[in-house]
Length: 280
Image (tube, rainbow, N blue to C red; front, side, top):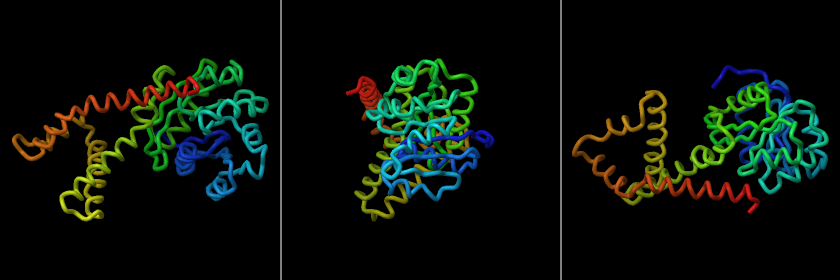
């Protein structure tokens, strides 16, 4: 991550799963010197964020004008509501946006064209696709800037997301494909851990032992990959002794055509992202 920089006032409209993950990384970084205002529909959800340093948490149930209040006071406005709710929210905040503010989408499948059609072509819009490891400062976030976004807008939004991980800038036509890899990717990893845990239980280990073995193996392998800087294929080869036990296991996995499985899985996710963009 980059050195901590002071960020301007930020609003997160809809600080649910993804908005909340970004908020956690942002607060932990200490970069939100300009303050962060977040909105949620219920008082319960708002109360859960109220004690975070530098955060003003608004419950829309108590303050119906919360979204417009937050947007009017921010230079960076993150849209964290569900994709189907985005158009109504944009129409709500459009009249109060500050001149020069940048609007950042966290919504899967909603295009920059959709944002510009409601906010106007001169409003800076950037699509983002973070993932949930933002909570622990280990996110991968894809960014795609709209035509009205300046270099300063892009730098500010990049700095915001670098507080909770690494950033990859791509053209908008690649943002949905990126979402199928890094956006959904943590779920794939968790599924693999689940299945390896079940395999351990099937070999007679207690659930607690199985979880430790499976989970810490993934954590350790990822840490080794990060620390070594080696290609994962090379690290795999080092573990796979000729004619050994790992070689037998890898052969079974390769026979299962994991390459095809992951290609089909990410294709399915991409098809759904396009459905969301089409409003279905």
